[in-house]
Amino acid sequence: MEPRLEYVHPVLMVRDVQRAIRFYESIGFTLRGQDVSSDPKYAVIQRDDVELHLQWHDAKEWTYPNDRPTYRFLVRDVDGLFAQFVANLANPDIRAPFDSSWGTREFHLRDPDLNGLQFYRSL
Image (cartoon, rainbow, N blue to C red; front, side):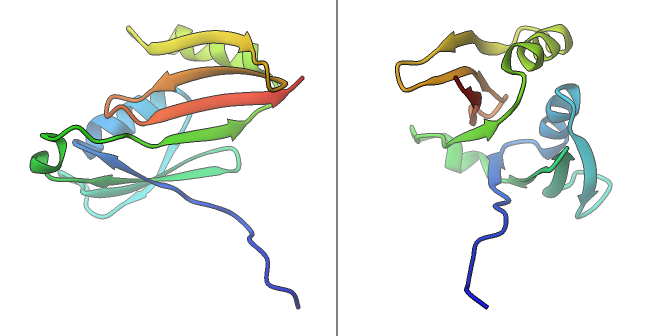
């Protein structure tokens, strides 16, 4: 059997796991598990076939400027998903859908810990 990559489950750095869970639940993710029920430091969330892991990081790690990672999600209905997010988020850090020069329709969002989330489809 040839070695192949099956899935990727990114681990996102967060300052407050409970707050991150609430944010991701507001955009349709479901909590699949967490290390402890009170003040968790690690959690797994899922929406459809996408699984993300949320890991607490100490406040000292946030005091220096760091480049937050960006994650891209392939979706079928960019505009419908955008409308859903806008309807469910208070004051979202979100950029409206646009057609890129590289042949995609996409929109961008940042979570409360400034992790970049990009949702796209090919034109």
